[in-house]
Length: 129
Image 1: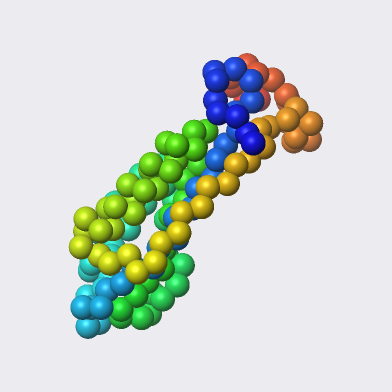
Image 2: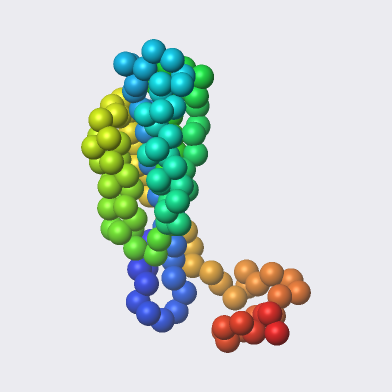
């Protein structure tokens, strides 16, 4: 299992994805559904730590499926971030008909992963000089 950041050495990133099916049974039209969902979607897309995608059911009145993703070096912090996003759905008065939170560890970078033609240096900004 990847280790957490300790301040030195390679950091193992974690990828987290929250998939949520949002029910909007009161929406009588797509315009009404978008009026409810887009403010939340816009607010999350402005947050640099989150990536949000409308995955399916965009043309259905009563439901829509989103995927909300984030990357962090700390799996607990990542889980908390995505759980807060799930809680914001409920706080906005939306119904989360189904939700799944997945966290996946990645391997830390290895010097053998260097990109051909890019200087390998730990000095900040050395690749741009």
